[in-house]
Length: 288
Image 1 (tube, rainbow, N blue to C red):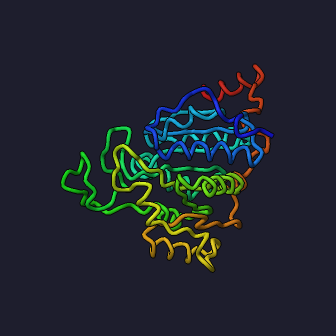
Image 2 (cartoon, rainbow, N blue to C red):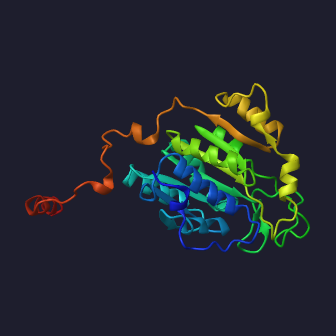
Image 3 (cartoon, rainbow, N blue to C red):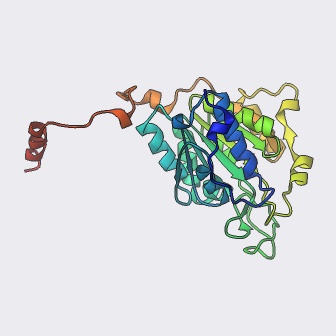
């Protein structure tokens, strides 16, 4: 069994001091070790933006994809080698703007993987523009008079799309975040974990103090049942999405891989696809 330190490498993150993404990285490393993974069992696929750099900071298989396309790549990795534990990661712009179509369809497919979104309500890498998660009235370089667009509610969309695991955490709550990632990794199906990860440089509204004042922790809500989809949707709407913890989990639905007819238990990456010269010639003749 690997330790937390074995998921570290010698690449120093260049995030701004105080960025919430540091905690997300640490939580992934701790969770991977806690569930018994080793670096060669884990693949981290990321998109573009500050959060996209995370795949290079973890000692595991990594792939830094293009903007909004982390999920298609991650799903391909999982289907090619079902023995790998696959984590896709990105920011709210990556997953809920250009990549939103991929997010919805990955959710409904229910492939056995985990998607971690670092949600800072702004485009940080491009120096501070409005994202789909920015509040109405939010002033940025792209909306100097304040945003007039309504804020996207990704977790409500996830529930409506048939998600089987929906969770949300706050980057300063490392214990809860690590636990939720562990649960996501162990869930048989697609796990969506949204993380409030403050941008200390360009977002001076949604700060650490602001989140602490506005978040409702489901761990302290008496009678909350994460197996109740209606209750989950109601609580999201009541709190405007400002809740943390395990929001919803459906353990009854089979994963995508379990439903593919003829999908071998042996990973595609390890199967022998060599064919004999005779078979190859036979295939060529079919096209003549």
